[in-house]
Length: 195
Image 1: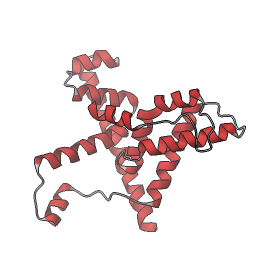
Image 2: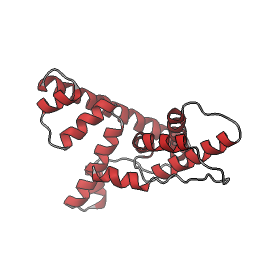
Image 3: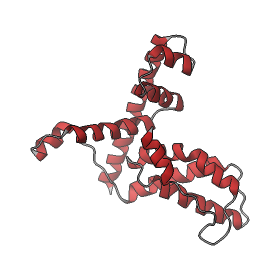
Image 4: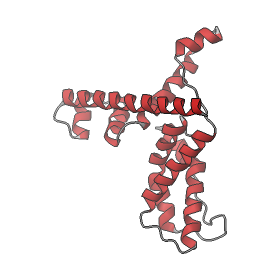
């Protein structure tokens, strides 16, 4: 949770766009509303969120300039999310960042073992990437598990009939997210080999 609060602090939407025009208040509010989804989208494509704030801020600036040129934007949130996805994909294709390897291969190549802190950081990144591939209900269930809620309470909060049903549905969502993540990685590797 603290990590998400720190990520929120990194987002800074200026009052004026790069041409000096005032940024529409509705656009600024929409950027705040979509921040978490935009961050997860950037993680999905770039495997980390360090560029998320910059991408969303640039997208808001571009949208503001379009609006000031007389081109209306009807649905701010949808426009911002679509633009963030497009920019993330563009950056992924331009500079491939990470080639994923199994931990065993890395240890064998490096000839050293990871410390507990490094392993915890790696695991946290993997969980965040997996979480980004889940739907909203799956993300909520994941967050509740991280907070040590039992399956009975999770079932109540997420609208499932009982603890067993909630747990089964959660693991189905995890399996589906893993398939999405692996499919994305395969596409990404194919794209790198064709370049």
